Every structure is written in C-alpha cells, then in structure tokens.
Image (cartoon, rainbow, N blue to C red; front, side, top):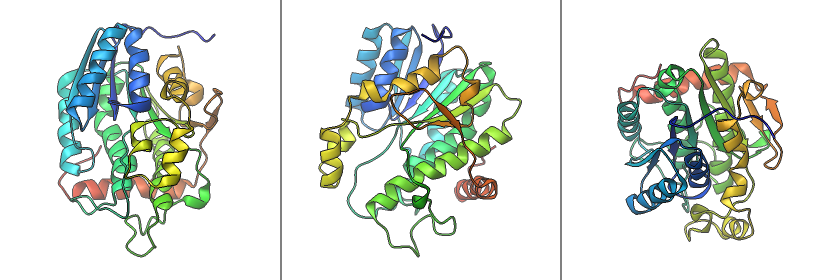
Length: 288
C-alpha cells in the first residue's frame, strides 16, 4: 500500500461534489480529517453531502451554491473559494449536466463545453496561486478515456458549423481537458501544483439516471460501477505521499494506478489556452 500524505486539516474543494463520484471522494477525504468545501447547484443535495462528510469525520464541511455554467458564476465561485481558505491542498472536478438536444448557456457557450471544459480550465487558473500556497496543491479532473477521433475543432467549439450530437458534445470536452492539463503542466513548472486526469467508466450517478439523459446513457449508468469504486484513483491522487509521476498525466484504467504522461499536439494545447483566456475576457474575467 502506498504511503499517504497527511490531509488532516487540509483544505479541499469538490466542484460538482454534491452527488456521485465527487461526493464519494469527498467522504473519503473527510474520513482522513480534511476540511471540505462542496460546490454545486442544488442546496438540498449539497447540504446532504455535507452532513455525510461531517459524519465521516471531516475537520469541517461546508456547501457553496454556485452556477458553473456561466462566466460570471465561475468568477463568483472562485472569489468565494478564495475567501473560504488562504491555501488549497486539492480541488476535484466532476460537474456535468443531463440534457437532450443542443443547449447554450447565457454566454452563448454549448453546455457541455461550458461545464466540462471551460469551468474547469478557468477555475484551475483562478485558483492556482491558492493551490501553490499550500506547498502541495493537487488538481484532479474526472474524465473518460475518450478516443482522439472525438477531438473538437478548435475553430468550432460551439457547434456553429459542425452538426451537434450528444456524444460529440459530452465526449469532446474530456479531450479539451487533457490539452489543458498538458499546457498547465508546462506553464506551471516550478509551482508546487500537480494536475492530472482520472478516467472512469459508466458509474451509477444521479446525472446518469436523469430522465433528460439519452436512454443508452441511463442504461450504462444502471449497470455501472458504484461511485466509491470510480472515485478510487482520484482519492489516490489527492492522498498519496507524492504524485510527481502523475503530473500532467492521465490514469486511463479506472481500476489501476498507472499514470500515462500526456503528449498531445502542443500547438493545439497552447492555442486552446489562449482561446480560453479570450472567452473569459468577453465577460471581463482575466485568467492568469
């Protein structure tokens, strides 16, 4: 068994952690005595998660209501997280939504792009200094082991030219996230911050069973793994004594801790970094 760092009193944020994989991971960190902040949309689910985390033994647990689908909502959440603690020892991203048909946010962003890529990328950049201040800040993306054939066209991220489909919409942002992880690792060299993706398969979560999900997704969720199982590698990334081998890496197999260093198109990764900055600036949000 790998040695663990002490997270007693450490500060960890779980974006989309009210239910599912994020909640399961938050409870595990709570058992180790961490201070937990759950960020989500639904207060009832969020408060229920907080109660479970406290019961598990967390030093503290709080819920922050926030809308991660809009740029102004992301900015407000980042401000609230910075006000919560001066140092962050880890953040984990699991936020997603169930939907039928193409949906645009109030910013004109396609919904999956907004939640599963842009919110994560923006929050990472807005909170990197708080993570570095802890001396060992860790960022974990929950993702899928998606084939490169689903890589979105960087000139058409909002499906204005391409035909929208559910699977293109929901799978593409995972690959964009890999590009962001690779570029962040390059740009944050020297900072005591590690960033990695933990891939999961079908999981029995609230989102997967939502009637707004296509039937095939609901069936996959019904026969999927328990959230606690899907969360295991993410918990390892947040608790192992060192994860230098996982910095800028993806763990593709849910049941094995085997980091694979990302080596995607570096020009695409750099370009996406700048596209993300430009999108944020449409609402006067400056990303470091």
